[in-house]
Image 1 (spheres, rainbow, N blue to C red):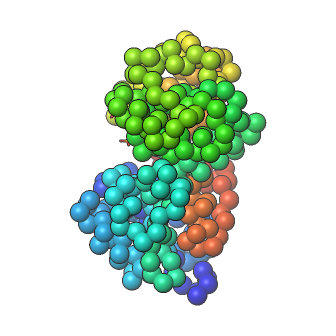
Image 2 (tube, protein in one colour):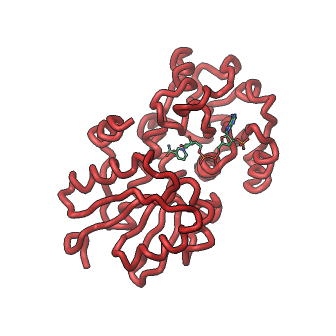
Amino acid sequence: MSSSDRFLLAGVMGWPVMHSRSPALHNHWFAHYGLAGVYVPLAIEPDGLQAALRALAPLGFSGCNLTIPHKERALAIVDAVDPVAQRIGAISCVVVRADGSLAGTNNDGYGFVHNILEQQPEWRADAGPIAVIGAGGGARAVVYSLAERGASEIRVINRTFLRAEALAREFGPPVAAMPWEERHRALDGTSMLVNTTSQGMVGQPPLDLALDALPAGALVCDIVYVPLETPLLEAARRRGNPTVDGLGMLLHQVRPAWKAWFGIDPEITAELRATVEATL
Ligand SMILES: NC(=O)c1ccc[n+]([C@@H]2O[C@H](COP(=O)([O-])OP(=O)(O)OC[C@H]3O[C@@H](n4cnc5c(N)ncnc54)[C@H](OP(=O)(O)O)[C@@H]3O)[C@@H](O)[C@H]2O)c1
């Protein structure tokens, strides 16, 4: 059956899920391409994930995205996990295959890198040391994608040092863990700083990080996108550093998902960005 012969279904499973901007994003494309289809938020309790994923095929879904707290747990449920999701240790996108079986992948790192390349086309991961603040799920995707792009040194700094250490041990060089107390000094000589913690997100305090040691030309990225300009990005902009916000990471990861679900390669347009921004 081709995309035009049936009602296209996809969604995002999370708990909670109503904060997700993904429905606005995907439904913009259904309208843009004049396709009969819908992308729905699916509030799935952690214990219900297996049953919910197994219901995708019989309900006619092409697949779904996963958000907190399902990304890691899904690894043990789907029928196939690709090497990217395996390495990141989490699934962000599930694809229902022709035989009804489920394949898991992770497009977070793809979204992170392609967002930067869109906003800073000259950017290179091997331009110098990179400081990544945080060691959670977002950090794993960021570190994976930076290492894949040839980063020569990735300094992972996390409040809970053991977690940073575990990540560094797992990925090996060029990833190295640094203690939280060293975070201000860890920016010295870097070409890039990435916040992957929840700090700076609406309802959370700003990230406690002094930028004095950060070189003037270093690129500053935040994967938090509510607000669009986090206190970290604002401070970086004020001192003249180039910045990249986190919304594009969300937008860009939809591209590989749509290719896998519907065989369509959607464009990331200014109009799409404005549609999603309007929901923030
Ligand atoms: N733009 C995108 O597409 C995208 C994709 C994924 C995630 N995100 C955003 O990224 C953020 C993190 O998500 P996640 O999935 O990585 O969460 P996670 O796995 O729960 O990790 C949270 C991270 O934040 C740190 N943290 C929490 N509270 C802190 C505090 N008070 N001080 C210092 N560090 C603190 C944690 O450190 P500990 O280890 O010490 O607890 C951990 O490193 C969220 O805001 C999420 O919305 C955005």
